[in-house]
Length: 361
Image 1 (cartoon, rainbow, N blue to C red):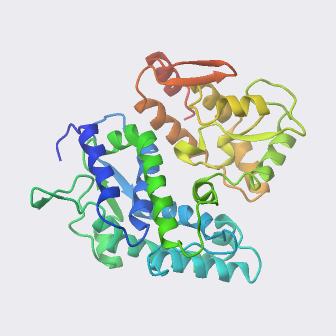
Image 2 (cartoon, rainbow, N blue to C red; image 1 turned 180 degrees about the vertical axis):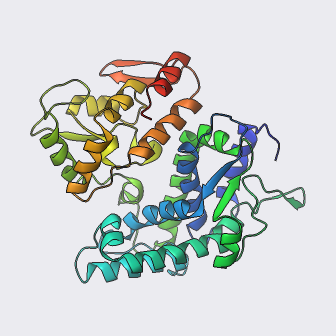
Image 3 (cartoon, rainbow, N blue to C red; image 1 turned 90 degrees about the vertical axis):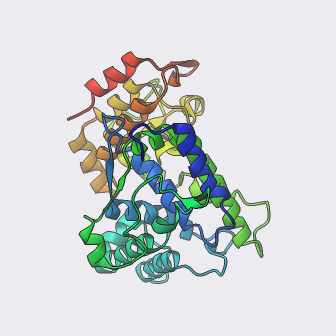
């Protein structure tokens, strides 16, 4: 792979994955979406650098994507493969059923804490499956009669051998320049992957799914109900006022993702603030001005970690720092950023420099 990666070419190849025949399962899409988020959070200062992606972290991201999709829709658990079976989804479904013991399945964090052995065994099984199948197959695009690997070296994959995975450092290495380029393309590619996933799930569940349910929201939307627990602890610890305009928020309180959910999907307390209806609606999924992110982090890592522990909620402070770094470093100059209601302006190089100067150590 050349040191200089052409974004258009790489983007076309990734889109070709979506068009490369009828998928029999959604696992390729899960891998690609997990890689998008990890690329954003792993952007190197040198845009031409190769970047290691830890396979345990990649596995965790894939599990997180599927865990919320275990929730029934209209009384049905959605199939994620043509025949209704699949190693990954079945393994997670069994873990959820064991942890629930006849009740509503708890959150993934709670399961990992209450059933550590079962969680770790499931995690390992998912990782081995990813290396054997989707990670090996996702780059299988034929061009001019030959196959070209354009993301990472997968020549050692296609096995579920724990020894083989360990011999390769429990990681995959994105080719030079690929991480930076994927992160730049993420705002365009993520909605395309989500749309393809929605289409696949609708096709795989056509016996009971019509065009009625908001399938995209079910698969990928933030769980607004569960966010209220985070809102309660934020309101108690900080002033019950809008983070952005300081207006009092009580009955009309919203919980907002500072770094938009649609871009990075971070539900940790470090990325959550209280907002009034007006600011929440105005900001929507726009990228905020960098000062908003640093102010959210300035609430203090120790404070946020302690509050998160009180409600058994992730803090994800490091993820917010990493994602903020990656998002702003790869945004084109003049990208619109949200400062406040009726206040959207163009991102400048000074913004990017200021943000990185003010990132917590």
